[in-house]
Image 1 (cartoon, rainbow, N blue to C red):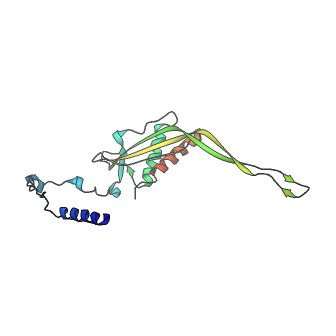
Image 2: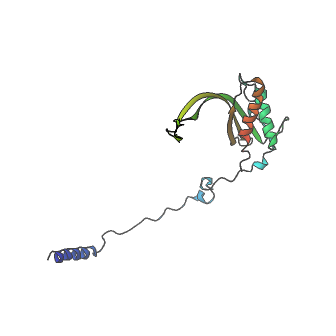
Image 3: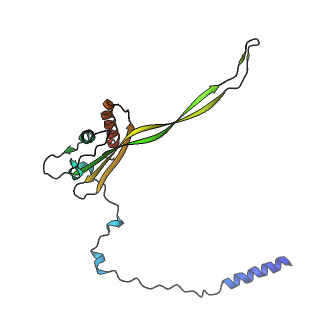
Length: 201
């Protein structure tokens, strides 16, 4: 009896759902496009064209200023390292009044890094000589040492000389040996690391 009454309720529910829908879909027509829509090009709707780095052939320092010097390295050392790295990539410095293709700025600073080194020391048990059997427990004991290291950080920025827009930027670091004779090598190494990804491929 219960199953029949349940079946009757379901049939009545289905019959009620088959009535007409009181909601009617209506919409207003779209307004006409403004007159300037036919001649306006929306650049934001399309991706920017790929930059042609091959057209950059010459460069000059941004605002005519060499990279700033520091107590650790003078301006000429940084400028020479950057100039050599640009030269290796086919970019030549301009020394006359012709317009350059790129403006270049560079910055050098010393920063301190915290480094961690993990050493695993092995510990073990003993050996029973009379019976020839070994015993004991062998395990490792990790010891983590933290120390400070001073690094040389170089940042190089390239700007399109016509538009002023940034074209490329990178930074890199290398360890600071501290010795006066090794400073030029550290600057050169950091600049070369920073410029290693130019031109982007």
